[in-house]
Length: 541
Image (cartoon, rainbow, N blue to C red; front, side, top):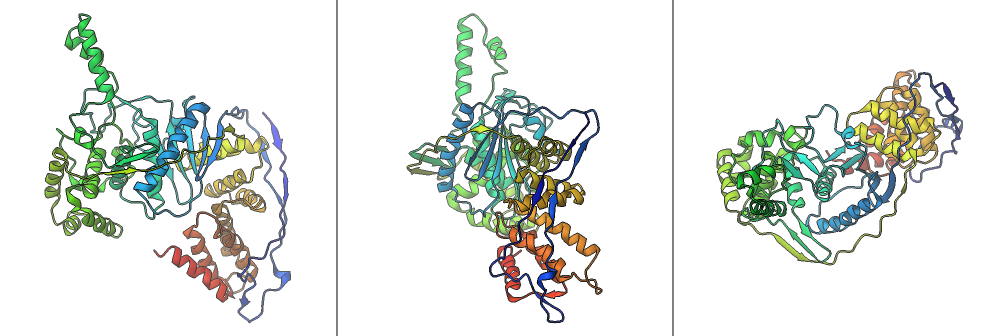
């Protein structure tokens, strides 16, 4: 296929004055930057992309799109399945907000991708991560600005046989997947990631397991309750009934049990999953990373995940609350120093072995206090779905691929709708950020200028354009002393001052503002210093 895609032309509006900010700063001689020195705003010409090989563009994909507060939704499941999942999710978010009011800063809308058919989910699994095939039904991917939750609605059961030491406590090799619970799990990861520095992975998983076990409806919430380990699951009960029926049909008990050995099991609480299993040594338990196999494959009777559940539950709800303050102290100390037995002992007043013995006792006899509340939760309004544009499909999938470390897949997703003529400003912003990431700043600048001229709401786009201009000014400073000229200073600061007014606030924006003034031949005025003070207040670390 040989074709040339002619670009659209964007003419940028004249820059608006930003109230309270002095872009025309005093230069070293005491003179002000004159109007003639303002950077010109040329006509923005988008790159011409020429397809010169024989590869055809991938065919357009059929997805549905919707928005709810805080989320952009891309789904290829049925409207009915999507609407039911999001209806339940809306009630869940209200219930969780009452039980676990996690403080979060404003963030960009999270991408929620629901994969049902076409084996789309597998492509999002992070590159180079040790996620075991057949063990994953949901993903949470994030960076400083963007995040994505991806749910595999097409998978009903997962294979629990893996190289990771997490053999199930039951004989079943399959786990029945509750898609609602998987969405709730990843939502907890999202909340905790937005509450400041990302907490230890054992705390994230422990809280996720507690939240997954929350029972709620529109009138009541039960939070922190642990099941009786002697209680059998609904699926286990059905299996026992089938075994009895097979026995009545003349099949022996052993044959009946074998014939149903592949019947799926369900998630169990820590008291059932760890009742007869050795615990993970705490030195190993506390030092696992977010990318470890155990953390990436927490489903079923994963020993580490269930131990995280037990430890966090005991500290928060068990033993008459005696471990709440030690846990809080431990977490504060962990934000400044690595985990160690000495640190743990200083906070909990017991050794690793002592805590393992205490945890074993809690698993065997779980004494705790849970929360029950009578509430009135509103049902979310009906979710309005429409066909997703190709720009939305490419942008959302491309961003998720970038978060998962798949730049080549992301390139295809971003470029394909652009070649087909899509010029949505959000797509152009994503393209610009991507091109900068792979070192193509010439293309990146053109895409970003076009997106910003259309007043795109994406602070990362403004930051990236400022980074490009900053690098250009560093390479060719505008004064003989090697400092930025007043014009260069203004060129770099202009997009940064817009970025600071958008959501989410980015620490890198304020850092680059400070670096720009440090290299500028102009002196910042009081209003400019106030912006830096604002950055210190927002990001004290």
